[in-house]
Image (tube, rainbow, N blue to C red):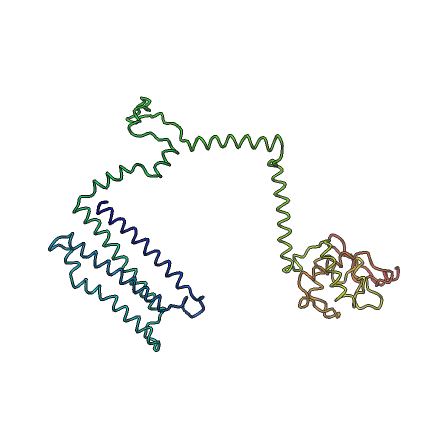
Length: 387
């Protein structure tokens, strides 16, 4: 193995080792959940000492590589000036200073000006990142100097050529079946257009298999859709999607019942809704409108089963009347006691009771409500007499 290859391997292994160490630190540091106004994790003495040890180890590598660079640069070169003894000693003293900072932070916790364990952790992380960058730069310089000194460019190229094509080249060759430069003369069609030659290259296998796949899929589609008809055709797919879309819309609207109001409420004959409305009506409305919603001559509230309404008929008006009430006539507003969905259920139940009043039902009051929303004035007293 040539020196250049050796330096490259050290470079790669150094990066992998550093990333692994940082990953271990990340897992180790997550010892406590984050909270508002507190550090994201607790920093203990072992983690601080591990970071200091990592810094010391990197400094040792940096000093060692500095010596190698000084040797490769020769006497009196710029390499020697860059990594002289004073610089080496200063870098070597850095871990000792970090250790003293760690000891001071662990021994004394009073005062706002002292470093906390959390702050010291990030300081050491920054120092280690800086040392790592210096280490990587040194490795690249050593690799370049080794190439210049030993002339290892040609041996490396020879070694790469002897190992053969990479797995990526092998895969591409199988997918494209491209011809080499030496084989182009056998594929030439002897057509020359302004110096551009035409080659009789084969179709790429990936393209051929894709084309064959479309043919196979076409046959499968025709058989399943038009012959044995186990798959729906385009019209059937459209109808199925429309049915599913309607079901999705209904399910979505069902989740919005709590936000319904007098403008969006709609009538429904759903058995569950009507049953819920009947139960609520029995609990809150029977006292004024009777058990069958038709009232009586002695009841406070009007008959809700005929076609005459004091405040408008239809699901929207009934919902509005229940929601806001008629305080001047003694009917309270139920919007603070009932949910919108519950008011809707009561309104739907009342609408479903149309024409079902008993023999003792109360005489009509108000105006007749037509299906189109119109009203026709009527003399309630005259109607009551005729009935």
